[in-house]
Image 1 (tube, helix red, strand yellow):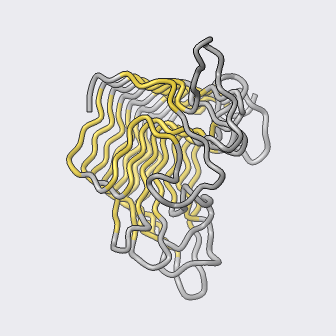
Image 2 (cartoon, rainbow, N blue to C red):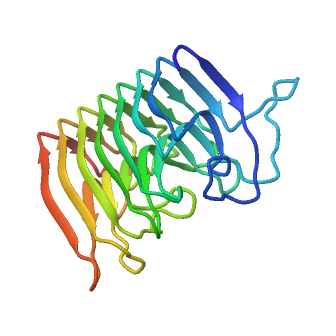
Amino acid sequence: ITGNTVSFCAHDQDNHPDTFDGVGTKAIGLEFSEGCTVVGNTLSNIGQVLNEAGTPLVFANDVYALGVYGRNCEQIKVAENQIRVMQTVNNGIAAAVVFHAGSAGVTSISEYITVNDNLIYMDDANLRDRIGIGFFASDNAQTVGIRSSQVAGNQITGNSNPYINRPIVFTTGNFSTAVNAQYGGNITGITVQNNTLENFQSQGIFFDQSAAGNLVRANILSGIVIEGNTLVSKLTASLQSGIMYFVRGSVNFPAIVNGVQVLRNTIPRVFD
């Protein structure tokens, strides 16, 4: 999937089910895909449609705007794309690149996925820029995880207002329901390297396995390298951090952290 221009596409929805169709408007969508490349595309104004006079249509319900969305995929390359200005409506969420593992009825692992050298600029007029690049893995019955993947060389910038909530996130949460709808899982063999992140609100790089109340398996974070990234935020906010990982266990299911390296990152101004 290369060299395409996708812009001004949207549909509104009155709910947000955990299905491929239900997650929202997608410029490029992959489901149960393997060995695909998404390279050199230009994606812009996803979540917005113009009438014949060039005026944006007014939607009654929520619009979720996604640039590239992959569901239960492996061996995917997303590289050298320009993704600009996702537009949401009401309670929708804007996200440039999302991979989700789970809700497939079988074991589902997002693995061998590379998201490299993309230019992402977020500027949602509805102030719902939530995620630059996100990996999610959540299932209350089947084994899920994220492994052997890389996010490198991306430039992710938020407008000075609004800000991106989390430019890069890996989580055992569910994108459709809530990040904290977590049942446990394994995040292993991940490299986050040489990315430039500007104007974020919460965490610049976040590994989130924080919920413990619904665990049905252990939370494991292992073999992680976070190296050479530059993170700049001009926002003054509480509970803001450049790089954060949060792994939590329960009485029956432990939290295991092993081999996490945070090396040579530059965080010149997390707080203004």
